[in-house]
Image (cartoon, rainbow, N blue to C red):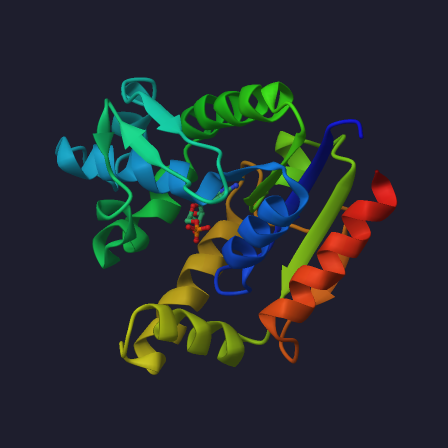
Length: 220
Ligand code: C5P
């Protein structure tokens, strides 16, 4: 089969990561979590004392961190300057600051370049998950999926992941992050015109995976 490029976009808590990893593993494809890359650069900004409210300061150092993503869906790794940051990028602090950092055009240009080079070098193809993959990063992807779910379902899934965190606070934080991601000037969260929309509110993870696997197989 020829390498197949799959773009999976959507807001937080729609099951993008679980679905993308499982689909890639099942079909023998590589996997890239682009949110982890934006989280990693945000972690670097925080660690180096960069003022998150100052886009000019962020732009000035956008090229400084060396971000390396491992693309094995069974073991997706992420390092910054050689340090494993898989844990630290999931903190509430990074989650609350990532939208501001990822809105800076210089940051997006840098990370987009990394994403395109990983996608084109994947031998058997790749599943790339994010917010602007189908619209901006890989507009020629073989298949574009846009995952949605009700705000309640998304918050419930996220608080499950966070193990007992307050669902209400999680819901508010998610809504705030989606609003910021959808309204920024440079490649906002958006469904590509040719993307297939899948509402996951009333579907199990297994059903979503099966649906996407079937769509990929039709393209191969
Ligand atoms: O997917 P995840 O929720 O980990 O993404 C974290 C953040 O990274 C998003 O809220 C968004 O601000 C940013 N992001 C982005 N473009 C992408 C992927 C993520 O701006 N392609």
